[in-house]
Each structure stands twice: as structure tokens, then as C-alpha cells.
Amino acid sequence: MQRLSTVATDFEAGFGRLLDQARETTERVDEAVAAILAAVRAGGDTALCDFTARFDGVALTPEQLRVATAEIDAAVAATPEPLAAALDLAATRIEAFHRAQLPQDLRLTDAAGLTLGLRWNALDAVGLYVPGGKAAYPSSVLMNAIPARVAGVGRLAMCVPAPGGVLNPLVLAAARRAGVTEIYRIGGAQAVAALAWGTATIAAVDRIVGPGNAYVAAAKRQVFGHVGIDAIAGPSEVVILADAANDPRLVAIDLLAQAEHDEAAQAILITDNAAFAERVAAAVAAELPSLPRAAIAGASWEAHGALIVVHDWPEAAGLVDRLAPEHLQLMVAEPEALLARIRHAGAAFLGRHCPEALGDYVAGTNHVLPTGRTARFASGLSVYDFLKRTTWVAADEAALQAVGPAAVALAEAEGLQAHARSVTVRLRQGEGALPPRPPPKAMPLETAT
Image 1 (cartoon, rainbow, N blue to C red):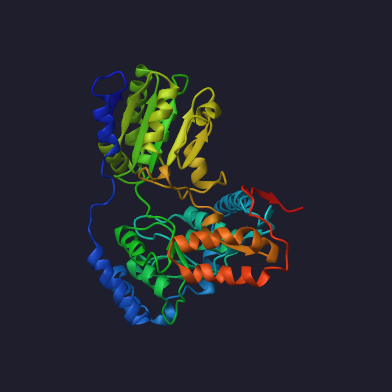
Image 2 (cartoon, one colour; image 1 turned 90 degrees about the vertical axis):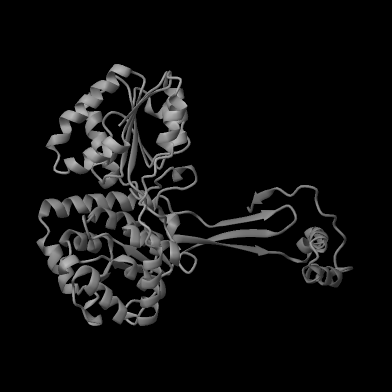
């Protein structure tokens, strides 16, 4: 665990090492994944069943790949009422927030007389990958499926591995609550291949979302371009900005909440009080032994954790932008004012009573977020990931006369004579039919009335 202070002469060197830490998996599986993808593309269901037997220890026929409705019904019935209520609360809040994101179509008429438009359409089919190995995350089912359904995606196909033939009932219950009925008991690169290329049993999709292991990540990279993907998920991370008015134990628990994800997760505290930083470090050491995942959280904190002491909060905001963290907690007196200074973070949680764990489950915002400093250019999952835009233009003869000569000039400058001619012939056909109108010097878009 690193201790850094911006007053130290070697701060930049230490902070640079923090930024450059290689927390992503170093396992190189590209060749193995390419072979799996090719086998499934060629062999379809037979290859899927072979890989499922090999990697998950489950002998399946093609007819058994899809989870039966009765099995989903049984999982829903077996869900304890408090958990069912928690799933419902989370799903309701996630749906409400994402429904508020739905964009509106656009129609504008400009000074030259052209009408320009933008139309939103949902994707036809989306594949949802849900991990089912070391851990199962029903919350991720909600976070991936509900925005797609709100966006209007017509078909949701979910793949979840069942090692030893066991499926997590709460994952099935979450899928039912999220509106997913097409579920397949397969995982790994072979599931990504099936979703991307299709088999006799599993129809291909247009986009694949959801996290997975190194094989899943490599498979998503390799099928990208044939289908869309959300992102390549890396280890989880949090940066907490906290002043000395906080309870050190609460800050320590919030740091450990990220560290317990896996050994490569990262938790960083930035504070303006060196003594408070040490109290938090002591609280981490005191709290750690009581966690069921103490070994994982301890390894994460030791290898990737950091305490950073700064002069003031504007300086801290600059460091946050360089870190561009997945999660950002602002446990300070005026969190909104501080957030206004920060540009790069996947999701922010404001105030002393708003731990990041709220966002993981029930706040309503999405917990699928950019990791590994990609928040500099990427955003969390939303309805926009399941929509696409189509622009359109309508021009009458007068509008063509107004802007067409400029199009001809640009096309000829680029040496594309057919482009130029497609406009020129229409301009000539219209000569004499309309009074000449010179192209305006500036044509700001104006909303049609």
C-alpha cells in the first residue's frame, strides 16, 4: 500500500507508478480463444456442448442448452421474500432512472431550406453475458438487461455458465424480473461465439454486453466489428475524497468494499489531513480480519491501495482527473461544489451517507462503468448503448440551388467527379425554374416551427 503526499519531492514519481500499475490480467489467451471461436462458428451446437462438457463439467444435448421456463419458475418460487423484494426495489429504481434517459428524435429546418433529422431506433437483439464461476451477480443481470428493455430491444438472450450443472437461482430470478426469458447454460468464449455467430439453437445478436474472465474479454475483443460490445471490463476501483470530519472506520469499510472484489481491485483515499489518513489505515487493518473475503481484500489493499495527502481539494480534483476512476466518493462538506471541479469519473457518490455500494444495487444508476482510467473517454452503461441513430435530410429544389454549388466545389476539389455531377445535373435541371439564390454565408440550424 502506497503512502503519497503532494508536498514530497518524489510525489510525481510515486503517483506515476500508481497510474501505471498493471492491474489487468496478464494471461494471454488470444490463440486459445480464436480456436474456440472458430470451432463454434464451424460446429455450432455440437461444439458448444463439447466445450461445456470440457470446461464446466456438464454433459448437455443441444435441446438442453436453453434453460426451461419451468426451471426459471422454480427459481423464482424458491427466492426468499426479502430477496425478491430487494430485487424488485432495485429493478424498479433502475428502470425509472434509465427510462428518464430516453432521447427524443430531432427535426430542424435551416436557413437554406433543408430539413435535417435524427431518429433513434433500438437494436434488434442483444446478448447478455453473466458470470457464473467464482461468483454470481444478480445485480449485474438487472444492470445489463433493464436498460436494454427500456430502450426497446426486441430480443434479450442471456448466457450464464453452470459449473457442475448448478445455476444460481437468484440470477434466474433477476432475469425474470428484468424481462429476460431466453437463457442459455453456457459460458466462456464459446458463449460469446454463439451470441456473435449464432448456432441452430441460439440466434445471433447485434451487441454483446456483460463482464467475464480473461477468455470472455478476449472473445469480445475478437468478435468486435462483427457485433458490437459494451467494453472490456477491468478490475474494480474506487477513489474516496474524505476530510477529517468523517468516521475513519466508515471510510475504511468503503475502501474495503472495493478491495474485496478481487486481488487486482484498487482502493485509494485522498485527504487533506495526514493524521486522518493514518487513522483510516489503522481502521482498515482492524476491519480486514472480520471480512469473509479478507484474503482477497488484503491482497488488493497491499498491492494496489494508496493513501494520498494533498494541500487542498482543488489539488485533489486534479489528481482525480488523472486517475479517472470507475467510482468516486466525495465525503466532504460541499461534495457538489467539489464534483463541479472534476471531469473524469465513471460514477460519483456525494456525501457522507452515500457509499458506492448504493450504486451497485439500489440507487438506480448503472454499476457497469469504465475501468482502468477509461473514464477519460468512456461512460457507464445506459440506454444509449442499446440505441442507434439514423440521420436524414430532405431538400427541395430551392434548397439544392442554395447549397449545391458548394457541394460541387468540394467534390471537384476531392477529385470525385460523379459526386459533383450528381449535384450539377440537378442544378442544371432547375435553372430557370427558380430565381437564382446565392448560398448564404452562414446557415445556423433553427428549430422548425
